[in-house]
Length: 89
Image (cartoon, rainbow, N blue to C red):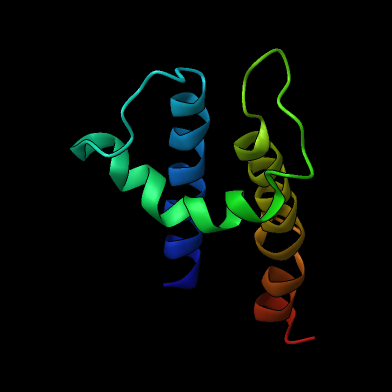
């Protein structure tokens, strides 16, 4: 169940990356707000630390990289949680 929630949130982040490429998108309209509302609190936390690159907000890409890293470390093929479940370590 946790893995499914994690993957859904990562896919939401990926949608947010694509939405950030189009700055004129009204993020308060229905298909877009489903990706914006759950991800905005995390993005707001580091938006001041990560400047826009070439006029594009890259904070969704930063968070997607962080989430992908932790996904690999914890749930990957040789991740910590995977090894604990397999071998009971």
